[in-house]
Image (cartoon, rainbow, N blue to C red; front, side, top):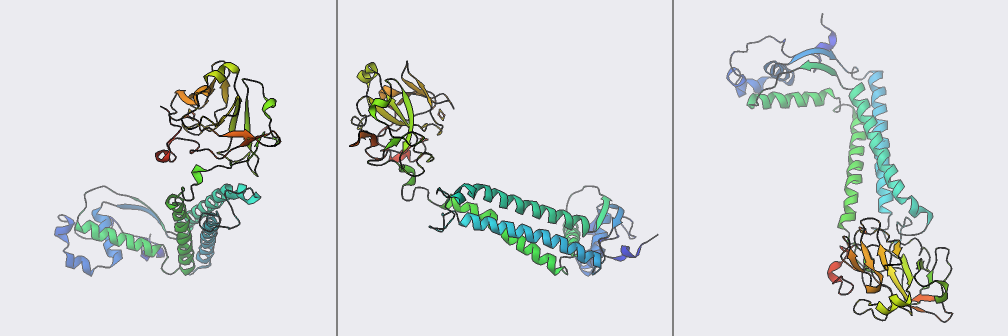
Length: 378
Ligand code: FES
């Protein structure tokens, strides 16, 4: 028994259609003959030669029916929401102060928005992907005709190309995109917004991170006090010989700056005798105190373990060890460069202050290694 829908494109056809199948398709049908057939005929013909057997056909909602309009509205709504979230991603990204200096969303600042920057990027991109997924599922499930068919596999030919392109075009027609304007617009909107969302992060790869030398400077500078995590300053008498304290620059956000953490170490008398700062840094210590960057020069972990007996600073990540009396030269492990040393002194009130910034880049060796002329391991 045939249903009325079987006369609509995509609802019938295949191996059950009549007609000769003598030799190969190119022998049976010349290009001229194929050119005279419409898409439905070509589709059915291609299906026959492909050995396709259509087992079940379920057409989508009738064109113009209330059901179709309802489903189109749902899909368009999902795509529109996806597009809006993709655009929000772009707004958050642009506001990162990378492209619009002075914009309120300052990724590197200390305002409340800055801490929300990364979560917001993730949330907007995640919601955009979720809604585009919902839209696609609704579209395929509720608007496209559903066919169940089996097909044998074989090599391609001119005949295959013509019939396959016809099948693809017919699928496009069956999708209703041609006449479902609202759906088409929402798809165009989400496509554009998605493209923007995916392309924007490339901007982060194009931007020159060394512009203004941000990787070579830290919050340390002449006269900046060394303070504990609670903000209290330190005097030379505050530490026992052989002890280590983690200190930060006394500037706003100093204890949160990734490149500013410092190890202030008071050497024992026997260590002081052996102290050999790197070339050009002989004046950097103050009395029996030395100050080294806490950021490992291998991969940037905090080097927080200090072995008093051997005078070695250990990095827990990959076990690099630095000799505290030998200018923090790496003596074991994968690190290849000394920990940068900070020049220190005391101010008029007797508190430790920096005499300037680190003379070299802090952190992993691949940052600007070419411009470093001091502090390398020998
Ligand atoms: S990060 Fe310190 S040894 Fe690898």
